[in-house]
Amino acid sequence: MSGAIGFTVKWPVLGRHERAATWLGVWADLGRAPRTLDAYARGLSEYLLMCERERVDPVTANRSHVAMFVRELTSRPHRRGANVVSLDSGAGLANATIRQRLVPVRLFYDYLMEDGVRESNPVGRGRYTPGRRGGGGHGRGLVPRVVKLPWIPTELQWLDILAVAAQEPIRNRLMLAWPTTRR
Image 1 (cartoon, rainbow, N blue to C red):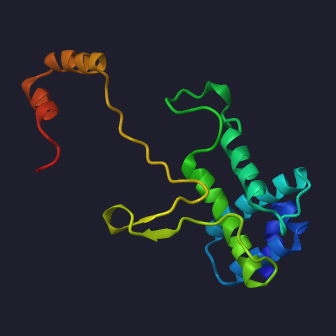
Image 2 (cartoon, helix red, strand yellow):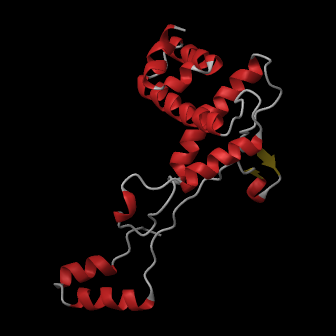
């Protein structure tokens, strides 16, 4: 457990939850990369802090407590405040970040199951389900993967693009018209 000592200094909440500190110590002793350990400690610490605020024992927490953590992550104010200028800015962490924060929580509960402390993992994971489209598929995990679709201009935006392109030299107009993929 020698690797867990540094984590309890940086994240004191880990020192208040012996099993969590032990779990991180095991990962450190197995030689995991420092940044991986740092990400795991951060994600688990945030979850443990939420458990403390809600007066929930993390060892006996259930799926609704994990869902409460996910809701907290999705509604958290942006760290740069309301001045962020982006099409998809606003409250909450990005989908990939939420999924990343859930990984150490899921692995922590896997550890508790292996030690016989729990019978099930409240985080769960996506499951392979044979017979779905294309001969097989994956069931949805707790937080489904979101893939951002490419921006497609409206008719007016497309006309604006073409108006600007009309003022360009022939080389640039050809580059706009030429397909980028071979068929």
